[in-house]
Amino acid sequence: MSDIETRARETDEAEAGFAASSLRRRGWMTRLKVAGLPEEVANPGLAPEPKTRRGPSGYLLSFLGLVALPAIAASLYFAFVASDEYVAESRFAVHSLATDTVSDSKGSKTATTTGSVMSGFSSASGDSYLVAAYVRSRACIDEVSKSVDLKAIYRRPEADFVSRLQADSSPEALLKYWNGMVTSYVDPPSGIVTVTVSAFRREDALAVSHAILIAAEKMANDLSARARADIIRLADAEVASAQERVIASLGDLRDFREKAGFIDPKMQAESLTKTLQTLIESRIKLQTDVEVSSRAMSPEAPTLVTMKSRLDQIDQQIAAEKVKLTSKSADPAALANQLPAFESLMVRNTFAEKLYALAADGLERARLRAQAQTIYLDVFVPPALPQEALFPERFASSALIAVGLLVLWGIAALTAALVEDHKL
Image (cartoon, rainbow, N blue to C red):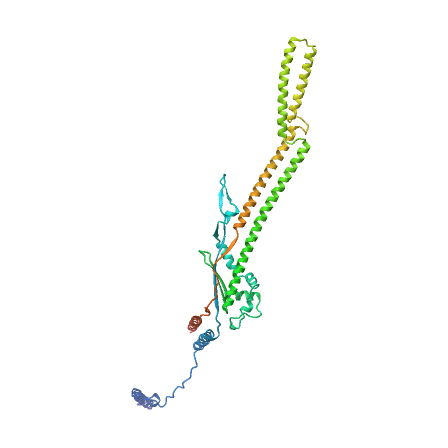
């Protein structure tokens, strides 16, 4: 065996001995761990890892800042700071007059007299919504402010700093504050309006509620008066226009009669017809006498000549009367030429008179409709002096705020956890 092979064998034996000693040491460390000794004792060469101290979680900090502290602050506010609010409630219905109708001989319906209009009322749901909207408007604030000092009422010493009206509040800010303290609700099936007024004193709530009812009734009366005035004004205008037409047509007839020299061409025609009929009868009789006399007398007899001359005169008179009754004459003053113009004027006059009669009847019905459109506020639950404060609901409000903050925080925390999970 060569020297190289001898050195290789010695090297292999040395590595095998080192591996065996390592296995023996690992077995002793295992037995020491099983015996419950610390790893540092079982393995003195193993250094312990340093322990790091972790700070509070971000979720805990957000919970404290967004849920716990605001909920505690809200509870303290409602428990010790929030001022009492007294509520006065009133309920009323909006009615309008019901108009009775009767049928005439032609079957058309017309309104009866004013006395029958007062026979009943009808519910006006549309007017109920109108009144409820008025209560929430700035116009109502302006009208109520004429009788009560709203800024003084809602700046009482009893009001806390959150609920109190600002001293330099603008009209828009006052309207927003008003809608927070005054509510109006309309019950759709019945049309009943409920108005609630909150204030920091019992007397203030009652006074503001009474002022609102007075303002709402005044508004309803103003609307009724305006509707009556508009309806009657339009009807009066129609009557005046129809009256002017009648006057104009009568003036045209008067001018025609003065120019023609007679009142009625039809009556004149009837008179001419009677005259013509009389002339024709006279001519027939005279013609008979002439024929009888011509048989007994000579043609030159004075009596026969006179009778023939009279017969010629009657013929000329009959021809002239016929010309007056027909349109063959070129004379514009002829009765036949004047009759169409007169008939046209009569048609215009008749039409104008009928229009005037319809307008006068419409004016009477418009007056009845105007009275029927009167709006009434029927207050069946008047406001009463409140005895105890209904607001704020301290426990319910505190619990509601705490639950709401907790729900919002939970949604935000869940969203943040999902975002971190997607980043991993």
